[in-house]
Image (cartoon, rainbow, N blue to C red; front, side, top):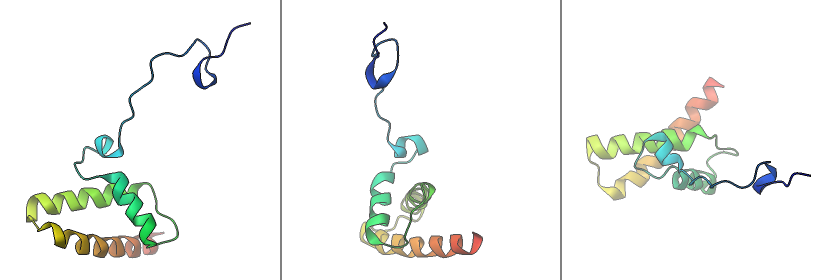
Length: 93
């Protein structure tokens, strides 16, 4: 009988992969996971899709790089962008 490896796979437990953040996958500097957590915690909608925090992080990164807004105004701007994003998607769907 052959033994099962880690996680139920056959062939033994090979080297585990290093976890990759969603910010790295999207090629962004802004924290996608943290923005997603804030969206869920802020209760802007009942459900938050997987693409919403990535999109918002990309927009915030663009604004921070191009427009060079002060940090304290990014929070109020991000809340406005969330509202616009949710309204736009409610009309599209």
